[in-house]
Image (cartoon, rainbow over all chains, first blue to last red):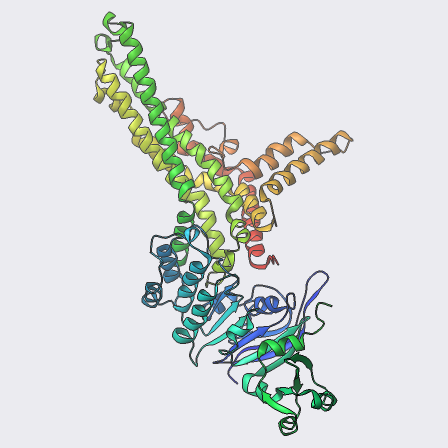
Length: 285
Length: 316
């Protein structure tokens, strides 16, 4: 089994809240996993556990290493962008490159410089003179030049405008990702990453409530547009969710036979955001 | 070793202002003030015709005693500029340590540093080395350069009044002064450890305002000791506590931090009072003090604590 991350009964308790509640999952190599959940669901805690930034109960294996005790070795194979614009404000572009090039054994300087050549960043520029979008460009260039096996992205594009966001994921997909690399990403802008994900994980109140690859998701969940006269029949099949559009009802079904649904109306694969909203119903209530 | 080198370089990049520009500016101000004072005196002398009376022409009564005194004066001048710059450096080091493990947690850039394969002990070591070796060495060298510039200015001015430059310089001891000061840095480093350790421990531990914590805890403890003593608790001495614990933990980054441990029976080898105070053999007699070593060991223990906190402090 070539799992990059294996979690078994991982729990993490902060003073009065259970951030992770006996979580178990496996992430194989060569996947792009979206870890999606409402605020405070435990996404960041899960990622911090994987990165060895927090203590926890249970077993967690990342690339064959224990993130708690072998963190320094782990960081040679794993890279992460946690939160937006965390580069130190005093550093210059050239200093950042020099530093990472001399610290990180898997950093490719030429690659980094070619990524930066596509941006407006200049070597003498300091982070404090950059816009948020430019800081992320620099950070991404540094990270993509590292030949890591696992890349963890925690809300990497929060607060950026749509041009930077699109470009971020496009660069990642075109210039970085391949079958030897694994990416775990959390974001609230689900629509923007849905087409690049291979796997989906929903997390709610510290538990994984859905863990599926995108193909299986298309088979398991279906969205059907049903006209008013068939709506009652559709409701008998226990839909996850129902909403009204132009006088028709759209139902979201989990695990109902596709042939049966065809009789009701037009079947579509649900979007991740619709599925998310349906799954998380009542979270903040 | 390469990682440590780059980490130290990183510290220098970040603190170029404190480590490099602060001593340069201090030295510059020192030189400027000297030049202004000399100019004022010369102008004053010219206006009042002091120089024509011959009183201020030393060439008439130059003897070995006068050049000796002049050489001594130059030594003192050089030493004072080094002391001023090293004193400024002590303030820089104090605040550097307080921020060293706190600032990057505050602005979240720790998330970037922690994404790189760097062991925490290396990070802490590089910061300690910056505080106790790199910053003092830069200050000592820049202080010495300022001192030599001062001496040259003074010697030039003196030569206008008939004292020969070479005679004065021959009786000054710039090389000896600089070697002594550089030679004292390791001793300084050893004696600074309690304060460095305490400040960095606070820096790694505090969720906010490390400065307040660093001061309040030792001062409140001292107060508690004094208060218990007032209540009649035996064996407590607030004054002893203050000078041996509180002051060691807060102010041991000041230059000359080893003097309390120097064996008083050691007098300097030779030369005047200033060189006796700078005498390496005399000062390094502090190594015989158990209290000094106890302080250094406590400092190292606190640094180990800071390293542990750096690894496990969870700020979310």
